[in-house]
Amino acid sequence: MSVQPTCASCGEALEPAGRGRPRTYCSRACQARAYRTRKEEAPSRVPEGDDGGRHLTVERIVRAGIAVADAEGLDALSMRRVAMELGTGTMSLYRHVASKDDLVALMVEAAMAEVPLPDSPPRNWRHGLERAAHRDWDLYHRHPWILPRVMVTTRAYFSPALAADSESALSAFDGLDLEPADAFRYMFLFASYVQGVALTLVGDAEAERQSKAATGEGAKDLDHAQDPLYEPGAYPRLARAMRAGADPWDLDALFVSGLAGVLDGIAADLARRGKGA
Amino acid sequence: MSVQPTCASCGEALEPAGRGRPRTYCSRACQARAYRTRKEEAPSRVPEGDDGGRHLTVERIVRAGIAVADAEGLDALSMRRVAMELGTGTMSLYRHVASKDDLVALMVEAAMAEVPLPDSPPRNWRHGLERAAHRDWDLYHRHPWILPRVMVTTRAYFSPALAADSESALSAFDGLDLEPADAFRYMFLFASYVQGVALTLVGDAEAERQSKAATGEGAKDLDHAQDPLYEPGAYPRLARAMRAGADPWDLDALFVSGLAGVLDGIAADLARRGKGA
DNA sequence: AGATGGATGCGTACGTCGTACGCGTCGATG
DNA sequence: CATCGACGCGTACGACGTACGCATCCATCT
Image 1 (spheres, rainbow over the protein chains, first blue to last red):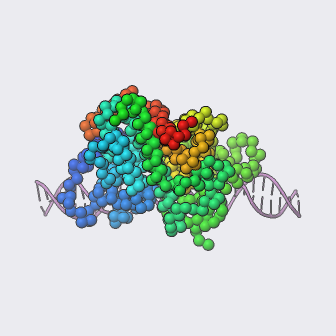
Image 2 (spheres, each protein chain N blue to C red):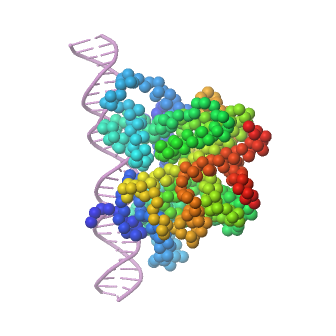
Image 3 (tube, rainbow over the protein chains, first blue to last red):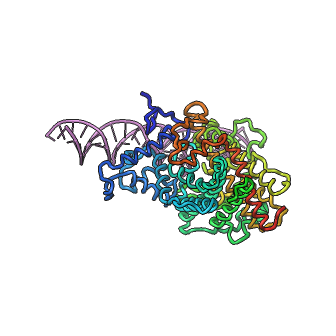
């Protein structure tokens, strides 16, 4: 009887998994099963509707976690902090959540479920992708902290919400009779761009929260004086670009502008393949 | 005399900065100055060439840190670990490095400096951006751990290497007589895409290292049986795409394919503005 | 030669984190 | 009324970043 940890779903032995965070499940299949069974066995003591606030549930824990992450970033999320928020002991959380990793995964699911997927078919593929892009953009605006998690999800974890998101984006090409591999390539280009911009958005949000906490106010525009990025000299082109235009950091405008470029690129490839639509 | 921390460069008071990691410098200007002075005052005791290995220097520390991060990921990087690698006491590192945050910043600089920027002017803007893209791609292949840092750098930190990278990419448009703001928009689109793909690359690298550490071998293709992403059902389009083609996870191929799309998009916008080149 | 003072190495200690373990208490069921 | 599983949580351990202060070394100046 060694101290080897076991998969929270199938109970099989689970290697310590190198130096990274300890794993909770042994495979994506196991994680998916855990989600399913959790949803099925929900009504335990309280008949589900009753949420007076006394009883500790997964939903309450996840909600509290999301509140903390929204307000103060993923760095501020600790099990002790969530427990304090709920007025319970730290270890009580582990009755409902397998690990911190698991909690964050559940938070991502819940946060993504909050922004609905479009349910009507798009007018055309371009409209479909634009809708999908703005949905994601909205998501990252509300919950910037989901990005670092998304970035690891594709291979290591399984996320129903993320899969549904991809599925929805892919459905934009439904009528076009594309090769599945081509549709996948387009979606990959599209999703990579959106996530790439999200990186900047998240970095901005983080920086803004930090400077807000430090100075008590949103220091949106610091003293660009002696900021090396704004001084011509080492980076003349960059400096010119940073000073130019209204505000190169109007991320929303940059996002839609770049998105148009991405869609134009896809359109060019579609035209080359004779699938105009 | 309070316990308030001070900026490592200008010595000014530095607010605790919310919940995030404690800051080391009070502004990008201060960080840039710290880099400059550090480079100037380098020859202290040992005349610089002598690197028998006995003496502790910033370079040795940074090299050790990079080695650890390359081999085991940023999660495995701790001050104690770096010190052990160098056979010194943990706190000795702080004589040469202001904080862990500072160390990571220096590691990013060193890692990026290792892959040279092109020094000849590009044949045309497309060639210039392709060169830049492949340089970044090479970078993320060698040092996946720099991405989470890059993602926060734009606003909160200043990185000479990153600025030089952007400057180099911008130079692709040199002959075209573009508005600075337009060139910036193109670069933003381009960089966002590259970073977005890098997200997937990094996630893959992380997952691979974990499964390698766990099973002792690179489990490149797990049992796709009962993997919910490969089973038609909940995600039919996605499942079809995942099964389709040779290997949808040939990231290098996906990268160049998507890059072509991005460049086509930029070309379309250039043509619309009558700047064909 | 001896004194001095800054630069350097590092041991100890504090407060944080995730979480293993085990005890106590409850409520539903026999 | 006895029992037993589900639940809440107090304590403790080994990681982490790093503040602080002492010891040592060497270049310099008397």
